[in-house]
Image 1 (cartoon, rainbow, N blue to C red):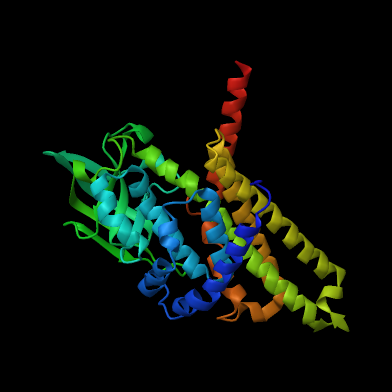
Image 2 (image 1 turned 45 degrees about the vertical axis):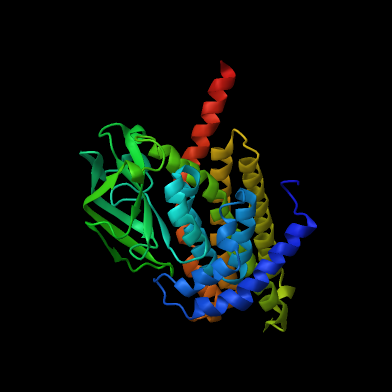
Amino acid sequence: MSAFSLGPEQTAWCAELRELAAERLRPLADRGEPGRVNRPLLAELGRLGLLARLFRSGALDLCLMRESLAQACTEAETALALQGLGAHPVHAHGTPAQRERWLPRVADGSAVAAFALSEPGAGSDAAALALAAEPDGDGWRLTGAKCWISNAPEADFYTVFARTTPGAGARGVTAFLVPADRPGLTGEPLEMISPHPIGALDFDAVPVTAADLLGEPDRGFAVAMGTLNLFRPSVGAFAVGMAQAALDVTVAHTSRREAFHGRLMDLQAVSHQVAEMALRTEAARLMVYAAAAAHDAGAGDVPRRAAMAKLLATETAQYVVDTAVQLHGARALRRGHLLEHLYREVRAPRIYEGASEVQRGIIAKELYTTAQKEAR
């Protein structure tokens, strides 16, 4: 298919996802507790087959799921995405035993996964990880802390990145699969503006062995970056879904809202803002699709495209949602309004999985590296 259009089957599937999200997932999300893992919602995602689809689809399929769900139920979108983020390293790098134990439970929604990369002193600079993996007989002991971890401390297992070789930067990081019941592993929830669960983890000599490795020792940074290159475009898809939801409600509102002896849509200042919202949303959508298609095709410029897609889409969504709030006025700030919800949701994606500034750094690095290679 073209990276810039969807086929009839894909279009129909996206419409079906939006309907399922509104009718079957939204009620479960509304009954959930903000800041806590919503296990009934995860179970329904499992029954619908969407979690299992995480492990047999490519980046474009993931983007279509995330955008479609986000338009009707951001909580369902985030629950699905966090399962994928935490479990993808197991799917891509895990042993047969690890896959057999955890992936079926992730797919049916009975096990909660988490991706534990960020630390109090190592957020955007992932190569500065300090969680220590100290040799202990045939294995290691993990000592240190993780912070800003989605689904913590309620996850059933964590993909944990720890430093096995001090002073080696990105080359000395190893990925481990750590079940939540390991001795020495504790955590606490963090109260954040985003409504999905986020917490901190403390590792007090947590034991891990070679059976817990995800990939090779000291090769964990590649595991992390491979996962992020897959999920960064889909963060953009999540953002596009929120932008589209904000645009749709704004078109409806400005079409019927009476002001200054006419409808808001009749004011050029308003209609031009709505047009700008639509323009930026579609541009972001196309870049997300293009990045996802490049990933699935095995293109060599995936890091740059993924960074561009996440950057443009998340910054666009912030603009679109903010403009939608402005055009709605005070009603959009009332607790329970769709835009009040989106206003809280839209801010975090510009930070997690690499802040906007990090994405600009990746783009620039990739551009200069390519230019230097071509100059030789």
